[in-house]
Image 1 (cartoon, rainbow, N blue to C red):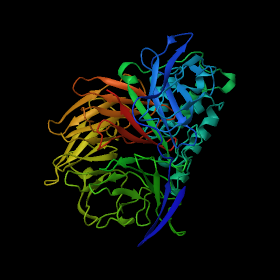
Image 2 (image 1 turned 180 degrees about the horizontal axis):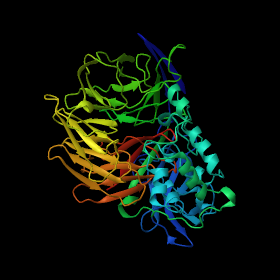
Image 3 (image 1 turned 30 degrees about the horizontal axis):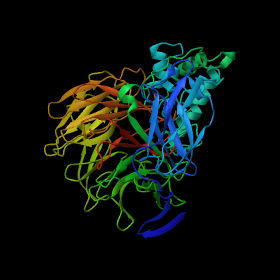
Image 4 (image 1 turned 60 degrees about the vertical axis):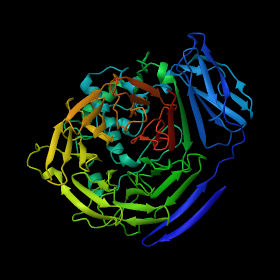
Length: 577
């Protein structure tokens, strides 16, 4: 059933659409479906992901087989009786029965053993990390492909690159064309979900073909990249690698997890960000379309609100919303494309959940350039790249503004402030991926502090500050998970030991003090225990894994939420230990 609501809101209009799932019909508790997974090659198999989706449902559930090959779906997660389709993820293996289905009944467990066989086409299963580590090339050549702020793997996997037949000259044209897409609003998955979007920056597009470089790393030359790619793809009749350097399947604690994926109602949504309200409701945005949405975590019901389209005379060709942060009252705040702001990321708005209206922020001394946000300990909203803006949530007006890049005590260089975070004292910090540093500002004195990361050229990207004042972040080109203690001003780095893992961001700690960071190139979610240094690795159910923000559930602090923007889904990860 679909229900539409239209609400007038001053200069903006929102249209709410609701998608409703089927009612729960079975009792809680016990096993709904389980069995043993085995193959002729390995016998009983540990670390195989099994995903079940009920016919007609908008979500699926994944569990992982243990050391005895046992997989088990609890009735708490397969709540409804019906016919379920099953699929697996175990690189190098296929199901003997290609598309098995099973009937799950109310109040009675079902057993189904699964037989696996060697995969007919392993190349369609491997991750970008497994591709790049399996082909020849120097570390510098491979870094041209992966270690970029907006690399090939930012929008799609390396499979499409390495299965292509372009020669070196043709690759330069391909790179030029790829640069014309808006990277934050373009996703190319393999499931027919996501959307490609051309950039609307006329000045930038006019300069694309004239610019010999690509990405954001100085000296990353298109011609050199094209030459290298033409040596590892299928041009000239070259075959694919005979063998792949495969990452290990999950083991031990990595198998103790339940993962639920919910389909967003618009399959072309590019949900760059997601946050969770104090009541446990996930909110998300669409990076290249003017929508914001939420999902009821108990029912899986989605409600979306359309922001009024830009006028025909707008200097922006398309609109979208960026980061989203939900305040103490449950109101989401987000930047959205606005004619008063030159950049696409836009002007910060609040969506008032009670009145269903959009409220723009005001009081900027300069023209705001914002994408990411943070909420301080006093509830105030923070944003900004070079200039920090602090917004009073009661008035939606800026009450503090400061450009940290003009401080005399920071080194000269290509500073690129990225995600802002606020410590328990109310002072803002930001990752500077241009110079690989963490930067902080004292609100009272406007003193700027500057701290380079221990790993050179680590390019810290996104992250959050916890209640203890520890800034957790992903070291995107350093392949590590970083922590900077704003109290002691000391770094700690955690190494998952996966080359080209490119951790993108990091969460705050869960109820047990553990922090989560995603690897979009390896389709994995890392869990770091700061007390022991242990890193547990969870494999994701789909090959196209791409998330930019990971949030701990504020109600059940054992669960983790994020939006998988490459296939337009909201994902809940529940560790069982």
